[in-house]
Image (tube, rainbow, N blue to C red; front, top):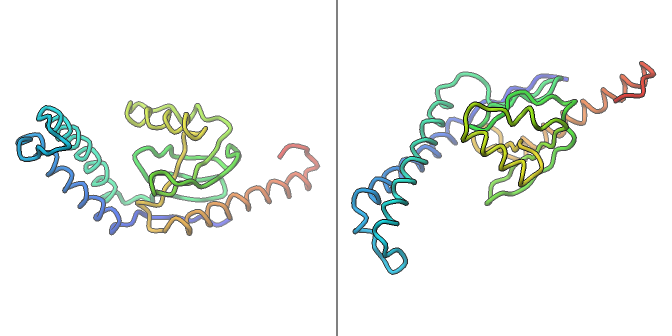
Length: 189
């Protein structure tokens, strides 16, 4: 099985960063001068200010994380004979061995497509020193039955290409396991 190295898409990251800059600006404006944003829908000045503060901090945090990806030289996703090495997002879990993968399915979450990777031992992927990352992984586990969800949003591949190459590689791994089982006469796959 050949090794496939997928880099981040600088263009996609720059577009996302541009959107985050707009959210940061609106967050600041909402927090500093909420009176300008009073409307029939939002009449509570305190609520508008809180939304501004939350928007600012959340957008600024994402901005810093994505800025780090732009200047990172490493590959965001590596597919090889051992599995997937996922570094494509803030909640990436690193190495996901083929032998630990049960299934790979796709789903849409708020108009974004994700590959849902169901694994045998999901607890090892939940260990993170970062409480925000850990919380997101645990939320994924509750919602999808696995903490691992991979998107192509920051990758140089579109979702269809990413899905095809990962599914093909997983099928190759399973085929190799069956061949090894037959040649060794062992009953374990």
